[in-house]
Image (cartoon, rainbow, N blue to C red):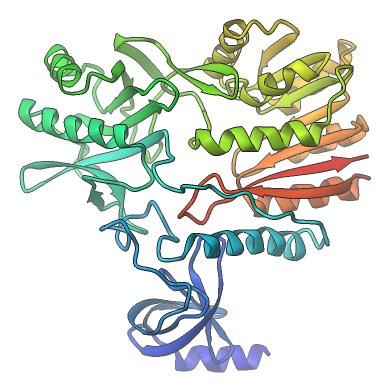
Length: 459
């Protein structure tokens, strides 16, 4: 096999063109084909396509190619609705019929558990959206200048070249109304975008949020400067053009980094928080808070968490990586006690505020790393019946999983946006004596390659 791969590589060079049948998808949404024994990854290709590609890189075990011609399209291929779909890095699957997207997302979850966890688990039918458009409540837009015009959008695939957007099919319409106004006002006032190469200029990113329940907006300007130039003029012009705007914030990031936010944020005008709802609960969202980007599907996701936890009213629940408390507070009415743990101080403050906002009293939100706070809770005599895990994409720290296992927590409900790290962590927990009940995928991010999952594990 190795000899065959090597010989194939010797034949495949950058710049060559080949015709390839696409038979699968990567977790990033790229098509997978083969030239001889060599795997080839092709952006914007989908299973069932026959494509002619130009090789752009070739390694020992794989190559990458770009489509020069779709020789025979898949029967499930469609023309993207978005005019910049092939350039913008925001969506990867717009060329697929929506039902086909759901099929491959479920397959991605199944493959992760088979390949990484080496487990045969029940992956239930994915829960998709009735209308998979305009669902995002948050936009993080890099900003730049081309031909003396302010541009704002998303990075072109695998680059830091900004694709200017006047419309986006997955963002809420109010987000695009605000973004057009921001570009116009910045241009009018002559406030310069930040230049990554020269490290000169002011505005690095514009981060927008929209409340689906109240049709209101928050905008945060991330600047390379401590002082915001022409602040009052900008505020007055923006609120005149966008009456739905209720909060304008300023975040300072003077570091040479790809990280969007700096450490310091202040409110320039309006409310400190945006208010939105999930089900019957209200949540106050500050500029740097984590809040699920798809409120329609978040309701469905949290109902699945509630179903998986199956609380009777007698249980003590630990919500680890709790953010602003959304999941924990959503199921708190069915629990005896709730402890939330989060390492971002501002998020903990928001979680406490959200508990008060909804009149929920039997909860405690603690600031710190979960793997450090959990042992302290045990020393203080806290009991635990159910653990909720909703970590970032990288998954859980093994130290935390080890502690949970040693405590022999009866039930774990794990929420994840990354099937690969989820499968890895679930495999570890199975080795420690847990059994997987089922996996429920939820499509939180239509037209992208991402998929959310709820997994139930019991001792």
